[in-house]
Amino acid sequence: MLKITWFIAAVTLVLILKLHLLPALLAGLLVHQLVQLIIPSLQNHISDTRVRLVAVGILAIIVVGATAAAIVFTLTFFRSDAGSLASLFGKMAQIIEDARASLPNWLLDYVPQTTDNAAFDLQTATVSWLRQHATELSAIGREAGLTLAHILIGMIIGAMVVTRESVAQHSPGPLSAALLARVQGIANAFQRVVFAQVKISLINSILTGIYLAIALPLFGVHLPFTKTLIIITFFAGLLPVLGNLISNTVIIVVSLAHSPHAAMASLAFLVVVHKFEYFLNARIVGNQIKAAAWELLTAMLIMESLFGLAGVIAAPIIYAWAKDELNNAGLI
Image 1 (cartoon, rainbow, N blue to C red):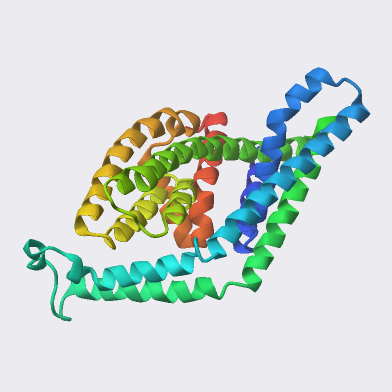
Image 2 (image 1 turned 45 degrees about the horizontal axis):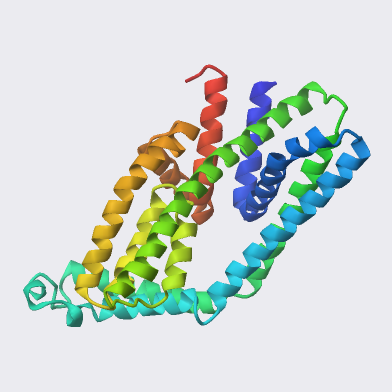
């Protein structure tokens, strides 16, 4: 029975990734786990089943509404002139292209000057990639609307499931019970990975915000897209290990728009912050999913090669779930 449910769960996860339904799954799990965190306090104060059902239903609606509002607000910000990702990518492309003009004389000897150089080719490819994706981001329309619809449906399903669970009294059959155990395992892995990573990302975003919005302006350095950089730091930070590399690269490149000294200061700040984050990761993520950084990176690399960006996002959760299942079965 256990092997059958493992197979069903694995096939279901592959189908979710192949059919691009990961946003719906994550949204449903988020609503489910948020409501689950609050339900115990309701059960302690409400004994009547019908009243508890209504209370849980209202709570689920509030969570769905708040989550949907947060998503819409974030997407609206990124599509606005102040936080446009397309404009940010275009700005980064321009900064990289004009990097030679902003470098001090002592560094110019180390920068490629001709087109027969691998570093020059890399710079050209990077600029081309950024400009290409800036155009794609500005043209986003139907696909974004479809993803939003999937997210909304996923949140509604998550709310319906948690509402049913709060009042369910019948005992499921052996197969149903085993499948529910697999689903509960995925939900627990989601809660441990995502909630732990949110804590780290929030701390990182606060420190980055203090640096970008307070410390740098005190020294007369005002970087463009400051709010966007802080929000990118938060969302990229939800990806273990890899997310920090993404946000750090963006911050350093944008800092180069002001001066090489600002870029070096940003690099020094980020190195110090991430030394602190190693401690946080060991205490928070390490304790939650019992996985080293190399394990997560390997899982993310394999999942990216199989499923693309969705695989990178899902990898930490699926890896934590698989490791739990193997551990519970006494196989590791």
